[in-house]
Length: 425
Length: 163
Image (tube, chains in turn yellow, green):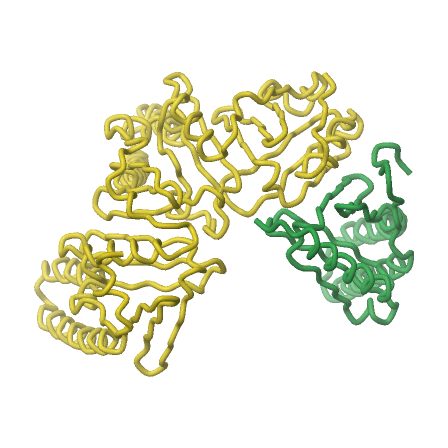
């Protein structure tokens, strides 16, 4: 803690004076676009200029006010953030309660060498954001804060060799080979072929859809570009992004489960994506949330398995998997052989999926509850499905269409603390 | 009732049959509302009589079927308190069985609506950190509900393992 004095000095600090400009940057860009667009016909030029000036003036005044009233202070035990113009708010965050400290750089901030520091605590809305600080200060602040969290000192984290770094070519290829993209392509080609006979009015439609898909791919690529994984004392540190950069720490102990996803075409190349469920990282289904839980965007099976072993602290490949019984073909004719489940003293592993296959791994100690369901058809066939409940996230371990006696045994004994179940072949 | 869900070391405790009374009352109320709606419709709209006859017949079948189904569903709803975890089972056609270890419980709720209160019933609801946990025991006598809640929270505290 040699450089401690400039930050934990018990004094109030303000954010960087450029902050309001950077925060309203997006709005400015949108407004500029609108101006350029409407000045083409030249009629409303004056109105446009006037509205722009008013908006800019109001924005600057409000921004400057908000900047003036936003202050933060770091002391030995807590961070205090005061915000608010008319409604003042003072928030104190205890450093020992910090779950994660992230440094993010949106594009505009990156150009000016600024960064946003977000302080995450368990319980959704309770954290705080400091936007924006100069990058070196944000990094230093994060280092000092993480030093004081119970995880221990973090100063080794900076220059450690990367465990994994995504290859840009492979990343781009992988995004184009996703099942969703390929099926969109097939659909578009079919649409074109059907249209070839009659004039081709649908070409525009197909082109529009194609553009949307391309935009999605480009966004994914930009977010995952340069994805680098390092080990730090607090957990795995992830840095990624082409335009905006985000860096994130996934603590080992907070990983509730892990899933390896293999789209159809990736399988032929031996590629895997690895996602994790971390308690507290909300899963709203939006792209950002999904990316926040990615541990490896695209990697070989061997890389993925090595990492899984490190994260789970156990070898999931040693778990013997067993297919669903033959009579399950009545309910899952195409995927019956993929519906596999297995468990050992520490882990439960399940696989499923037809085009995109997935392997879910959940430590038995992390299972919150277990439920077994049996529909009418399953009952006639003597089958049942067991689901393992863990906090929300991408991982969903379920053993579908098992023999009902085996399912019952699994359900009542899989939670940590019960005896290790024996599988009846 | 069935041979699959046999608990080795604790008895299944059924919920109160008064839950069936409650649900059947709701069924009758809904049927009465639907019948009233149909009558009004028949008087106001000069529609095809066939549709109304079919609707009335459907209602006439639905009531006894629903009546029996409620009886069987309520009879199937039961819980068992084991040393380390709580079992809850329910359902006739679509069966569901839930295991919640005491140590993983985050909170235990007791709720009782106005009708439930009039009949002297309450619902105990168990929550863990997983949203998939939907362990719910309706139709408990308030005394039993409070006893269950206190026991569950005490055991949960003793065995807490968190996330």
